[in-house]
Length: 324
Image (cartoon, rainbow, N blue to C red; front, side, top):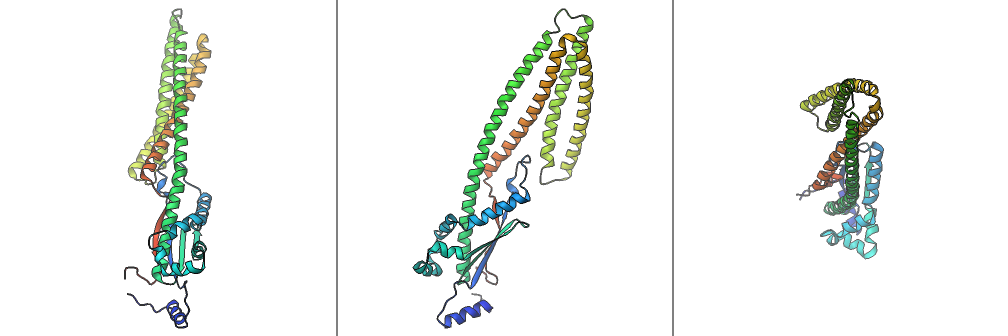
């Protein structure tokens, strides 16, 4: 066993010779930090600095709460520690353990530092280990319950979007049939030519809108990927160029489409409504696709069961090796 020659050791020896004991001679320290690996969905905005600071303060209070302290004391072998046995005779163990714990918050580093004191290095480390294990169990339980509620809400919202999208598509299909029937058999060759051109432009605009919606969703995903590489950068640039070209084409076809539609008096009202509904359908399709992508990432996160906090530095006492 490693021998110590520190001020704390000398003080402890002197107190022992005098028939006294110091149950706070050693402090075990551990560092925990927020885990951002759980933000798998690129469409979910990462928390702000203020939100992280609030989260850390809440965790600090949780660490010294009754449930965590009580669960820490029920960890294997904790009740067998000499300091716990002594405290049990004269004090409430929850209050006793709370007095020996300090939780320091560092918003800048996004960390929680646990400091637990006791009479020996072994006891300090054992108590610190027990507190951290109980704290992590509580965080996992709390965060997972909240996460599953959010996931269920997201699933319901996605289903609602899907239902609305289905109804809009049916309405648009019916309106397209109405516009088509308005051409009729009585249309003159000139009117028929205009109608054919209007139909062609309308179909091309619709195709370009859907193509743009898919590319926009793909671009949003790539831009918010945490691990960027050369291929990702090239893909992002390519998508941006294609989106710009897509917008230019839409502007061109839309302008000619409106000009032609205005020339066909009997289709004017239907055509304007069709354009509006096509626009709405495109935006709704993009929103539904993004929501589906978000739901997919969150379901992956649920399967991985990632923790919101992880241990950076295990409990240790400076100058003491627990393996010795």
